Amino acid sequence: MTKSRISEYRAFHDFTKRLLTIGGLWPYDNTNIFYRLLPYVQIFLNLGMALVVYGFVQKHFSNVAVVTRGFGIMTSFVTAILKVMCLVINHNDLTKLHKSLDPYFEELLKNPKLLEHILKKVNIFRFLSWALGCCVFAVIAFYIITPLSFIISCYFHHVEIKKYPLIYPGSYPWKIPSSGFVYKAHFIFETLGSFALFFVTTSVDSLFTLYVFQIIGQLREISYCITHINHENDDGDFVIYKCIAQYEQLIKCREILEKIYGPVILWIMGTNAVILCALLFQVSQMKSITVIQGLLFTTYSILKMVQTFMYAWSGSCLTEESENYKDAIYSANWFGNKRFMTSIVILLTQRPLTLTACNFSIVSLRIFISVVNTTVSYFFLLQTLDSDD
Image (cartoon, rainbow, N blue to C red; front, side, top):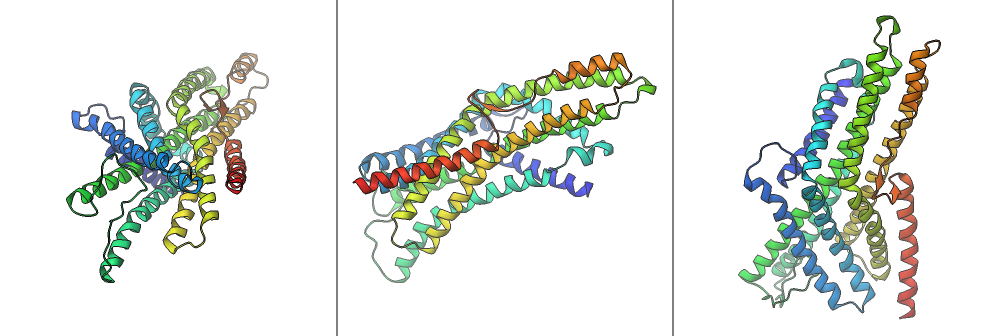
């Protein structure tokens, strides 16, 4: 069982590392100029696609059904830009956070006594990361396959295509030929933008859950240490000092994580409700749905739900483990030892570890419930506006 959990953690860690490395976002110590330019390539591709789809939204702004179709796509690209910018702007803090968590957790994995404790729920963290990656890849694949299947179908049925479709609903400030090299260049650009969206979305969201899991692992370690103090060997003072120092370090890590991911979480929780609402509205307006469209809407909805749940659940897990740490302190063998009792009181006064999004809201499962409720409210609002028109 322990070996299985270690392999799951390794797979979770390596999956996140590979995706971030491709995008130039993994905090390596020494990197060349090409690697440091990769995040800006990601920003350029996502920004280009966001502007193209924005042109489509602006062009059809009076049509609610058409606007909702492009708004969700545009928001996804803007979200990817925000994620990359938060990591690039806070690169030094990200490196500091990584050095405080990743190497230390590797050392914890070498302690057989702690493995069973620190690797609890690693399978759930890994599954959420894997599910998000699969959903993002599937959605992008559906968007790319749809125009390609249309072109192939017309070719086999000998139907002349007056204008070849692109991947996303967009409006360029110049005229695009119906076929030829210029059309292919635009199709390739949108394909590259799709892959940039995939790597940013999957990797940055997975990195958040990875760091939260590593913080939780350290909380479990100090909880284990304080409940296994041996006063006879006179190691109580050392353990107390270690717990206090390590907990203070975790508070700093929490603050860095909030600084980097606070704007991202706040933006995601707000926009995902709008995107889910837009998806529901699109489905309600369609008279018939093809198999590919049905799969696309279903997968996209699952993607946004999983993404929202990942952040909310990770925050709840951290809060829960912080409370478990307080319980471990109170359950320690402190009876009859006045000096140790004083240290216990000091430990109990430490601030709990809770994540907040820009000091606006605590990141917990309540946010997930709030997003679902907001989605339903926006959907009924859109239906009311559409019926009035």
